[in-house]
Image 1 (cartoon, one colour):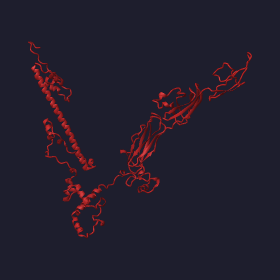
Image 2: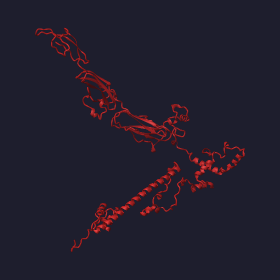
Image 3: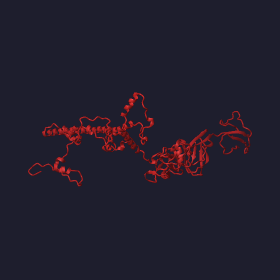
Image 4: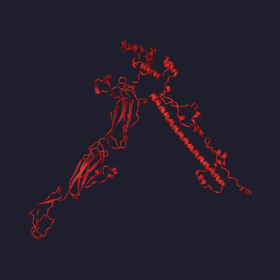
Length: 588
């Protein structure tokens, strides 16, 4: 507050610092120094303006006027945004229509020119944007329109879209000076002129251009006998060409033929043909006979079947490998023709095999006659199973060379029978059977035994046990073991039946080379069965009313004896089961 109660001045605007970098495009410090608080003041946003409009209707006239002006500004702002969106949409649509029109024109040129369109290197077609955009609309919004930078006059009507002859086909002044000599040739273009020339020369071909212009005897017409034929013969001279024009056309066609009759590189011809490279493994006379279709040695009827490249070795084989290791083998491809050849190798499809970049004797991937290129084949086994794949060698020959790739590891062979019979065992008893398991193969192997119903397991750690592999009423030990070549171990099979019946279970033996075999374990559970064959003195019969054991099947009675006297009877008992007895029984 100043002395005397004078009103305080508004807070001065904050100046912005000059940027430290001289390359920056920030000019806010200049605008702040010129416009001061007008530039640094807060902008009235949409939410603030909406709130001010809603609060309209008070007694403050200044506020009413301010809100009215603010509403007009927002209305004008929204209107300009709508126009900007409309103009932008119109420009995008015009560019799309112009692009479509240019593509149509370009496709028409491609149809007229044919396959040599890309080789000619023609300039792009004229832009159609000026016909698709509204110039008045762009001028109304102070935008640059095509009329500002295109100075040529706009035609009253658009040219008709027809099969117009391209400008690059028309004769140039230089062509007229060097080629066209007659006035009639200068009035027509090259293509109609050649078409008319070919129509007027039915007896001329590219192979007879060097012959004399004298017509052959078989084309000479006989003298007409009738008046009608004589009149047509007299009027035929009007359609014939002058002799000078005919000679000029013959020279021109001969010049066209000479451009194609040059000595071509034998490398671009199919191999083992007349113009192609000669084979280095078959005699040329035999190749010539194959070309002429005669019967030759080696039972080769097709000359194209003669190999162009020879693989050394013809097949790739990996025999000893472990999981996780990397094995490599080099294969050579030898060029067996008399010209340089390109080669392309298609790699194997399985993930266990890979092929590296080729090593060529020269630059450009070309193999000279008799030379070889080398490829390295990598083998990374994921498991110890057998692998099969191949690589294709493609050359200019119609038949590709197939090189097989195999990985075969000699499998281990166990001397285990398919069926293990544990025999008979009493119910509630335990019987153990021992078998000698030997590896008669030539490679090491790791094995895991599991019940067949568990295969395939989520992982081998879940089924690999330390003790017995149980599948009631059988058990096998050990569950996991490893055997090298000619190594043996003792395999124990336990049988403990719980019911008197024939029992059978199937176990699966899995090897680390992904080989799977099933073995069946059988056994018979039996109850105790004894039969009394004879007894000394015979069996006794109970007297009437004498108490006896109801469960007893036989009664053996001893005669009365004195105290401390001894008597004996011998019993003959037979075992009715298939279980071997452990001891004999003697009753006294």
